[in-house]
Image (cartoon, rainbow, N blue to C red; front, side):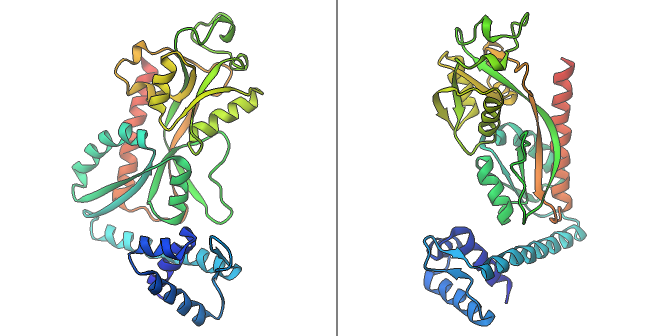
Length: 315
């Protein structure tokens, strides 16, 4: 058994296809099939059920892959520790982050980070939260940046995660002229909605797979609202612009409004009798070793965005 075999078999397990895994690994499909057959012969067990489509792991295969991931993580931890011993001035950080959040958070953080670690390459994997979590658990990224939802969607019986808060982010509702009326507002408050009264309001939602979509759906369930959905989008910024045009309301993170230049003209409201903040976290595997460069990058994020949060509160 060698590290190459561990990588090959875990990749097949992730792809659920020898052909797709071979493409990802840049080897031929027959060569990969021969490697799998060799490992199975050496172990005396079948790792994959090839009668199923897509192929699935056998019980032995599940045990193999679970242990293989631990071995690969330990190997990666050792490499990071040795990099730190060598002063850690070169290397690579691969982080996962939603597309729009990357545009908002990374420019300032990278500028500060590169002052101390100019030789460390930072790669961003951009996707929705569901894809990012799956990638983190496979080992595709060192850590990911995501909001913490009000219900735990991150737990896994086999893979434990650690979270550190970067900053708290406000959730708000955006709606153009005529969408929200007096009966939708908290009594005596023109800028705060009564969430329970929003049953007749048309909504713009993020597509499934996004953290904000799951959070908004929980809000609807809590208040027993079955909303009329006028359109779905993959972008919070698109949701803000669509809502402000007057076709419906959208619940979005504050930063989706903040990045628009004419934010003062956008019709924004507080969520009132509904939790209106969530923590934006850095998330990584519990047993993962974060080297000096990775730890510093996280501290830079905390420094920059906790400061933004403090300024916002003061103003």
